[in-house]
Length: 178
Image (cartoon, rainbow, N blue to C red; front, side, top):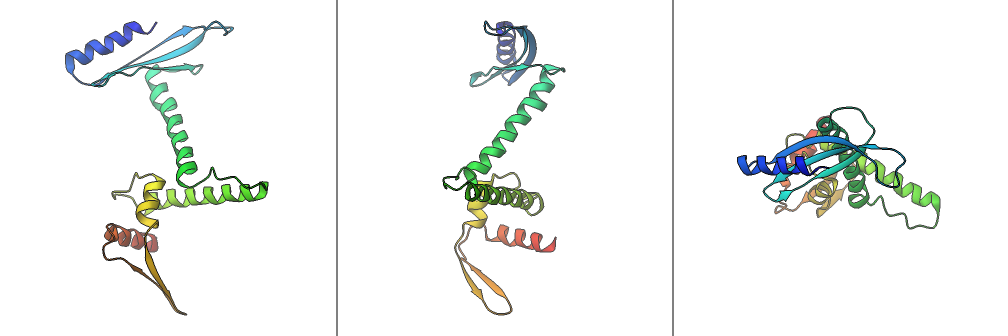
């Protein structure tokens, strides 16, 4: 049912040698389905070949806007969840006590919220402006330092060979200024 639009995308790609994305929709009922459902088709063709996507939806609207604004946004949300699980250990709920696991998950949520705030405030217009939590953690937080503390101040001594030293200082200044 999508062969025609997929062929169209391929022909346009061969003509222009540029990525082609075409959208359409149709109604279809698989054998176990009681009624027909709307299928949104993205027929994409690139230098790597065809890359079709099919979405079952009951939402009204144009296929392209539903795909780009709803489906891709949902995928982005799932990426944020995965980022919290993998980079901030939200999946570590191995304790036998429910409260301990709940507390771990809350700490992970707070850490994610803090990292997003740091990304939005301090990392704006830097190399790490769109970095994932794991990258930020690795490049800005997982660094060796000597901490000297006395009654009046705390001093952090960073390695002079730390590759992100200037970025770290700029970010610290932005955070303390706000």
